[in-house]
Image 1 (cartoon, rainbow, N blue to C red):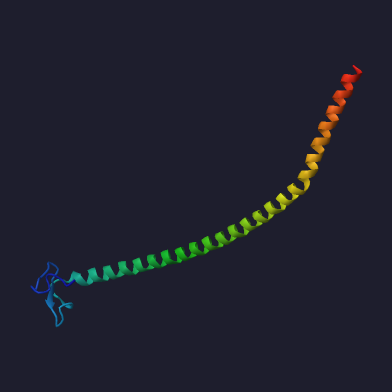
Image 2 (image 1 turned 90 degrees about the vertical axis):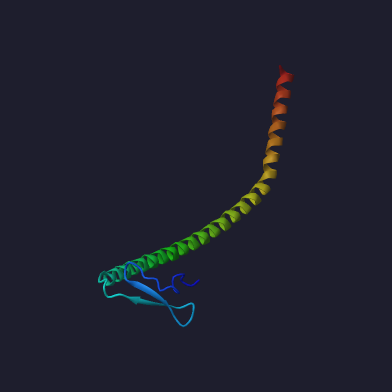
Length: 124
């Protein structure tokens, strides 16, 4: 959108004025030499922009570092999950193989208890 003041020759307090250029999207900027502090303000703005650029670069490098860290953490979690899954599979196999032995032991124990109780009741 073009500057609304471009066609009027608007003059600001700081000594800047705008004029319409050859194309309606272009604006020509003229600086009045009366206001000497404009150069200082422009230099100050340039320093602040340079500082903001440095901050943006630091933010970018920190974001890249954190993304790499998160990727490494995800890989570690995937490996740990695979290890847990393997161990669960082994444990299930072990329980299934020894589960029948435990059932036999429980049945044998119950039979022996019943036999002991039967013999105890017979002799008393």
